[in-house]
Length: 95
Image 1: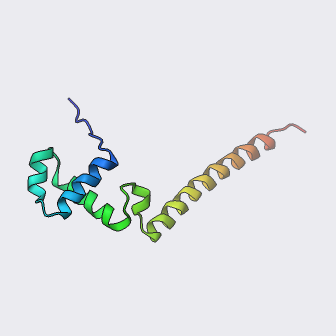
Image 2: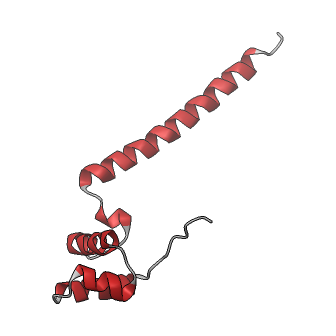
Image 3: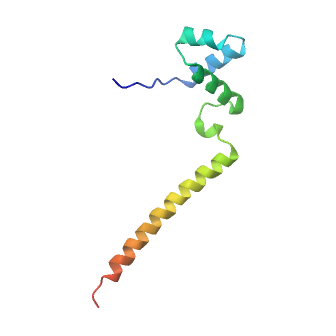
């Protein structure tokens, strides 16, 4: 059977981060709430960086610029392919 991904609300994540800030150990939180160490540490790091758990809010300026550049690159490649196809179609016309 496949592994299912559990989703947690931002409120739940915030509560876990607050408990960790108040001195609860990661291992204690792992046992009590059936969480992984990675999840707890990631949530704490994200919340400390931006106060948000949304991935886009936790990107550095360089990562945001790279993401924008990659998106623009995909768009330009698609437009280029369309122009190539149009040139082929227009080049086939019998005069």
